[in-house]
Length: 194
Image (cartoon, rainbow, N blue to C red):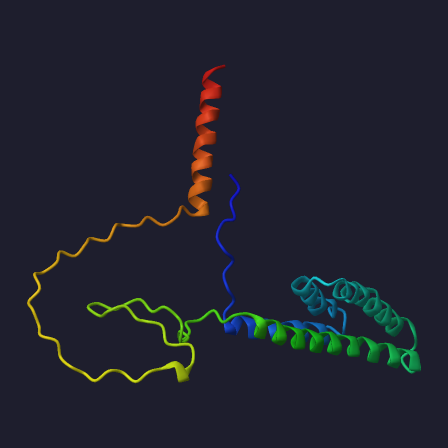
C-alpha cells in the first residue's frame, strides 16, 4: 500500500551553487544568529554526532554573544570580543559548510550524460552489428585481418518485429487515486447498509 513513490529530483548545478552561496551568507550577514543553518545542513547530509553537536552548540553560543553585546556598554571591550566571536562563528560555519559541500558533491556520481567507458555496452544502431567490448589491455590487441570482400548474396527481406507498447509502471499518484476510489466505494456501500 505504501510504496517508495517517485525518486527525489536531483539538484542541478545551478541549485547546488545557489545553496552553496546562500547558507554561508545567512550565517554571516545575520551577525552569527543564523550560523546554525549551515551547520545543520552539514549534520543532515553527513549524519555524524559531532556535526549535530556543533550545530546545537552554535545556537546558545550565538545567542549568548549577542546578549553580551546588547547588555554591556558600547565602549566595553567585552562587547567587542562577543561581537567578534559571533561574526567569527558565522564565518567559520559558512566556510565549514562550503568545504564539506564541495567534497560531498565531488564524491557523488555525475547525473548528466557521460561518454561511455571502453567496456560499456552501446546498443547497436539501425542496420549495424552489435558493438563488441574492447580488449582489457592495449598489448592484447591484435592487428585486424586484411580486408577481403565477401561475395554478396541477396537476402530476402525479413519482417521487422513490431515493438510491444510498454506501459510505464504506475506512478504513486495512480496508486493513491486507486486507493481513494476503493475507499469511497467502501464508504458508499457502508452508508447504503444503514
